[in-house]
Image (tube, rainbow, N blue to C red; front, side):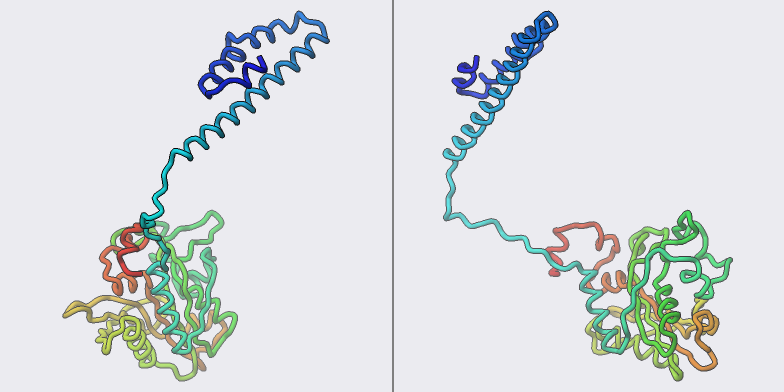
Length: 315
């Protein structure tokens, strides 16, 4: 049997012999069934023979597979004159491009970058921002609440609270990061990115806010002039509050961000005296700015992983 195994030339013949030996009705299978009738020496001899044969089958199978591989390789022909396939090189995602541009502009204005946790407690996400208990932002249908009472951060304004608690005033910072809300359509997603800016000092005014916003938009969109429309609004953490619209491609107005003068109660919650300091805050989604800059009409396009679009978009 051992010589028979060594002399087999094909994997098919080897498989047939293995089945005939160790299959359900194989010769070795039948002998092993009768092992109970053998004495100890005969059992040991049979076990040894069984192990030896199995190992021989395994070795011969490996040898035949290697021979088949080498034979296949020898038959292949490689035309070295053919042009290679085009190389696919990775590029930075448009969201990353937008963030780099935004951060560079704000840092040139003197804003310092801060980050914070995405899982927040009620104090930093709601209460310190002067958000009352009856405010819609606290509703279960709008916010991802966790079993321990914490939430998935609904706004990066929480980073402003942490920065003021740690540094006090004066302070000039911006916070970036992912935020989470229960919404999903062409212009909204359950996870999106926000950037919040904050400037607190003794003589900061609404004029400073509008000036920074206008200059930022001019640089980001690479425009010589930006026409803004300022509308009154309401946010619990600013007073007065405004919405900022920008004229875009003709006579179309686009809502870009919310902003306003930081509410005195927010300053007090962070240990800053509103009788001595005042300032402004603004916030916007950098996903939306990326959509406008790169000509997208559906926010979901940024996250669907379409390599064809990313390659053709010139990023």
